[in-house]
Length: 152
Image 1 (cartoon, helix red, strand yellow):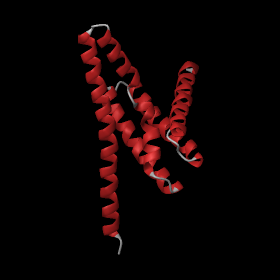
Image 2 (image 1 turned 90 degrees about the vertical axis):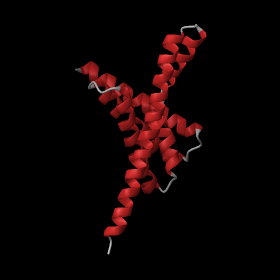
Image 3 (image 1 turned 90 degrees about the horizontal axis):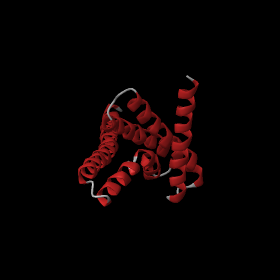
Image 4 (image 1 turned 180 degrees about the vertical axis):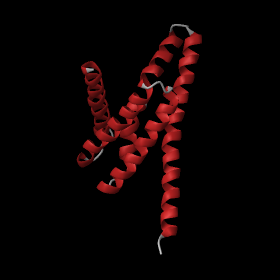
């Protein structure tokens, strides 16, 4: 049990550092760096929990990207900062960089079967990040329009 808690804690810390560190590289305002890290951490935590529960990585990435987008909207409203700062920093832990590296390494080693397989997985994961961000934005726009319609 302690190993599981330690593993989740380590995942949270490293994803927070990755998201906040990319916020620094992205020239995010200093006041937004903690929020950038938290958005990325919660997105990765949802992804990690869903994958640990046996859900495939593609739907887990969609749900994690949706959470990143929702949290980015909340942070953008609360801190009056452009949403793109939180979105970009938040999806960094979800980007399949290790799989893309393995795909390129397999291409170089002339192992085309595994390379194409890994490349397809990278494309699916990148597409699922885009779909998650887009779907959250569509739901947000529909919610706003219905909220404006309900106002007297």
